[in-house]
Amino acid sequence: MKIALCQINPIIGDFDYNTDLILNATERAKKLGCNLAVFPELCLLGYPPKDLLEKPAFIRENLDHLEKIATRIKGIHVVCGYVDQNPEHTGKPLVNSVALMADSRIQGKGGKRLLPTYDVFDETRYFEPAKKSLLFDLADKRVGVTICEDIWNVGDIEGIPLYPLDPVSGLSTRGIDILINISSSPYTLNKRLVRQNILSSLSLRYKIPTLYCNQVGGNDDLLFDGASMVVDRRGKLVLLGKEFESDLLVWDSEEEYEELRQPPLPEEASILKGLVTGTRDYVRKCGFQEVLVGLSGGIDSSLVAVIAERAVGAQNVTGVSMPSQYTSQISREDSRLLAERLNIKFVEIPITDIFDCYNRGLAEIFRGFEPDVTEENIQARIRGNILMALSNKFGALVLST
Image (cartoon, rainbow, N blue to C red; front, top):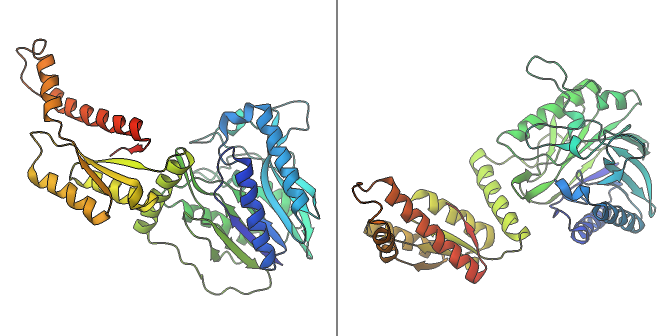
């Protein structure tokens, strides 16, 4: 059996866009001869949808688009994350769910059984824990599907499980041959290794391959690194998806994988790629095209300018130098040289006259006080006002430094 892990970058609430992503990746997986295409947690809505989940129209549109996708699925099976109504008469009204689609219809459903309420997660605010995971047979294999937190019941530092329920253990009693986890797991430093260790532990414990499909891209303040992966029954990482970009990872159950064909990025390269991806997606998904960066000649603003140029292209970046009487000539030259080397637009707006105007206006009330950090902060606020004025006038997003 061939399974495609479709690592996509959805936009929260853009159902038409997300539907196209799912259908296009499904068609690609089908052309590659895959039996099953797997998509991330809540990929139809984009994660995290937060209080949009409290709008009935939003839930209906999500369900309508799921049906629309199902009617288009032929010649392949698809596993896709979405939100369903809670069939019970008690508890929260929604369930974080997964659907199995094939032959132009929805053939099975399951849900997320463990709901995180720590760090950036607040899922019990919206969801009721599901009663069951998705389980189905395909190509002589029994496949169990869990959702993100369902595989994270690994215990605290003392080895005590975080939850009384273990969804993977429950699936193992049903005789699964393959474990799939669909996820929207945010990026943190070394998070990929943590996930890999969990998957390896599960594969070794239950002697089955474990497939992990993660969302990629930035949504608001969260960044998702993708890095979907496959760990074989020996606990060995055999396939690894790209970091911080969309990918389609194909695993063949009949193939022996001896070496990892897509090695992970070095740590610094991974961090930089994450910064670029987060910036690009924030700008794009907020509806902007161009950005502004205040250039001081220092390392902080220089790094932001480099990230901006890689994220949105040099033609969409304007560097703004705002020197005062205290700005050294070398700082002004460094700002201009940086813009030239990055091939970004450059403007210089001196703030000395504006700063002097502030000082004159405050002279009487400040009488008897020596200049201190107050005056330094006034310069920073002047620069911030100028950047925001340019932003308002020209419709460019300010990237803070």
